[in-house]
Image (tube, rainbow, N blue to C red):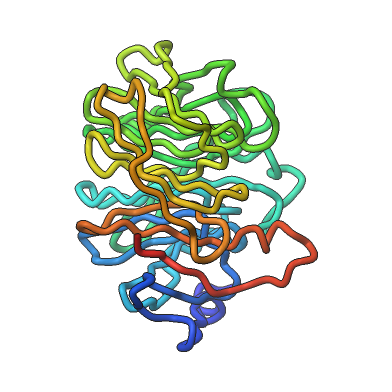
Length: 313
């Protein structure tokens, strides 16, 4: 398919399903099923991924959906992060088996990261993280530290990867606690300026603090309850963390910690309007949560949908 044809196909927007309301920003696409989102203050727009089409699109504040990156190497775009300072868009590439370009060679094995010029969408670099170890892989979420080093979770392997500013990719942290249980494991990740990562575990609802100076130092954050289905996480500030839960919970909680994330308590929670919330982004004083409706994509019997919501909390 040519680039022009792809733009025509994927930029279909239903006026009745796009717009900004008190509930948030609704938008429509050709059943793209976005799982990830990021906000670019520099460009004044959200960017969202696509589990089904393996692309990146922009969603503006009115709900207008426009394809931005259409790269044939991308099977399912599972994690996005825009670095406005360096004008770089980071995208994780995986294959859960429901994308247009899924295949036996990549399904459950693909773990890669691609970077693009955040203004033009032109490719910059591509990192094959799955080749760093044997077994199944799924590159999920991504975080950046102040220097521009990237950290990536693998949901099928007990690994957090690091891509440094020289472009060298390596296994950064590995722990047997990351691998217990079935299904998706490591998922959301956030960098804290005090020198550690906060990493969520999807199937068990645990939250870990991983030291950047010594990645062997991994401590569980004491929580009032297991946050089962913890997907995307987003720091509001040093002491407040947004955790988006699905897997039946379908809510977003705000955690607060007064002891450097040795422990945390829940200070706010809100139900998702649509099904399967997956990611959050901060825009000024507001938090937006992507209602992905991915449950309907993974259910063979469900009707497929093309309308989604960036829910305003």
